Length: 470
Ligand code: ADP
Ligand code: MG
Image (cartoon, rainbow, N blue to C red; front, side, top):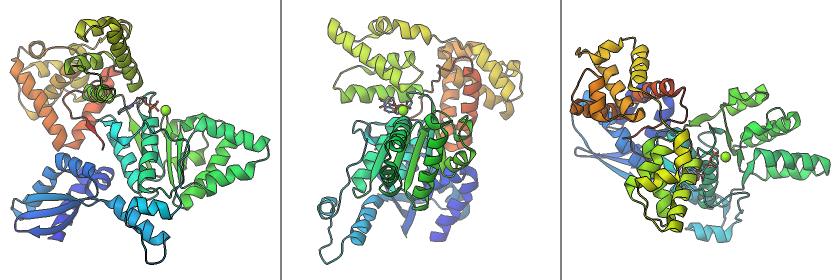
């Protein structure tokens, strides 16, 4: 039966790609089969939930195709970090009295205070959505198993999208699970200044010791800053090599992918590409609402979901601006002692709204989608139902709803006078297909990029689940 499980997984690997497979399927293990129930284990609750909602159906289909049997599934979380820390305890402490808990361990061995970490940025207040899925899950994974899976982890994306947040979250999590590890968070700018000061004051040995010898986890933020600074690049190159060879975890962020950093040394670019490179895009609408909800809850401010939705629709560019808008609305409403409704939000965010005004039309979306699939716009509006037309039509309707601020009936009108229920069904089908066919996400992503090319601030994606990581 174990064979059947691994065969099923292997059968899915080509379809899902190595990265997805390694992240989400490999960690799930089959323990035993009792009757028609598969007993599986997952290393943490997040992975369990993600596997259940995204991949379990696929795996069961795959098993059904070879056995013609339907299995039930029971997934138990078997916490790997605890196992790891127990292992560390066993390794580090000799004698009979092995510590059994983390706290006991902490009292018996050295704990290193992480350097530079901010406690306000954690996994439990980081909202995951389709825009940051890979980066967030890789960050989580690195935090469970530093130095083992993705090394280095390179996270890139525009300003205010959560790169720094993730870096701190990794540090916090590792410190909790492995307090004996020496963790350094540093911005590349401060790193550069530190290096220059060390050279100037002849304290180069201390600098070396800090980053090469006394560091188990290096979290370096905004590495693009060192591009073009030859000596700093050289120094980082040696630090990287020393840490990498010793299996120490390196996580780096940047505003662009490694290869796009001008004046960055080739040998560094190549190393930064060795592990996993994950991007963060602007958050979709559902994620923006989830972020706002979490901020409201954290600050104990009561705001109706409808109001959060209105704010999220107005501010699309990045999370920092979204937070700014929320604080503005919340503060003004307290000062003026008025409740937060649509009219109030509009006046409070007048200026933001003006810059984010949407100009994407249904016509533009139809044209982009038609070009992409090499069909005619008239086909999208017509009655033919062949798959080669029906699929682009369904996607175009979905993207109209998402990006053009047009109602379901209006969209129906633009597509040959179809009924609004047809448009609603098309949107639902797209969401369902995304779950079954990961390829679909890529297509939508590309279409969205083409459509939004002239409006980078508009990048909404409703109807897909946004979730907390922990
Ligand atoms: P970056 O480093 O990419 O410029 P930051 O990590 O500084 O962005 O994020 C800007 C702000 O937005 C921070 O306050 C951060 O907590 C918040 N933020 C960004 N992404 C998320 C998210 N997915 N969930 C919750 N808060 C987020
Ligand atoms: Mg940052």
